[in-house]
Length: 205
Image (tube, rainbow, N blue to C red; front, side, top):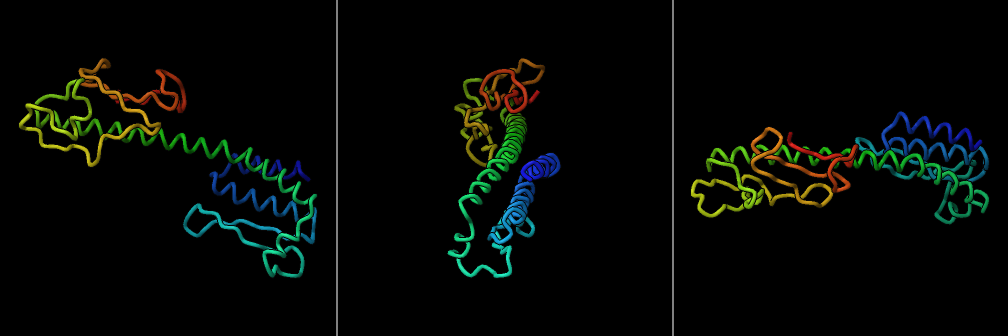
C-alpha cells in the first residue's frame, strides 16, 4: 500500500507544479488512509479557484458527517497518526526540492531583469551626461547626481539601487572587460565567481 502511494507521488513530482502536486499528493494520502482505516475522519486539500493556494476541506469517510473539531481529532488512533507522519515525510521529500528549485529559478530571473534595467538606465545616463558613471561613482550615480554634472537628468531608477536577490550589491566596472562599455555582475547564490545553476554568475555580457 505504501509503495503504491510512493509510486503515485513520484509520478506527480515529475508532471506537476509544486502547488498542484502538493494538493494532489495530499489527497492521495487521504485516500490511502481511508483504505487502511475506513471509519476514520480525514482532511482533503483542494486548489483555490484561479490560484495556487490550497485550502483544507474536512471530509468524513463513514456515513456520519463531522460535527465538530472534537469529532475530527477523535477520529484518529495512534497508528493512524503514525501513518500520517510517514505520508507527510514522503510528501515533504518529493515536494520540497521541487519547490525550492522553482524559488531559485525565480531569483535568477529577478537578477537578470534588474541587470537589464541597470543597462537601460546607464545608457540613458550616458545620453544625458556624455559618459557612463566612473567606477567611483558606481550605480549610485543613477539615483544621486554626481558632482559637476549639470546635465544629469535623473534619477534613472524608480527606487534606490537594489541589491541582488541574495542581498549582495551588484558589481559595476567601467570600462568593461568583455567587449562592452561596462560590466554588470552578480555572483549568484553562492557569492563566488563561476559556478553552475543557481550559483552561476549573472552578467550583462
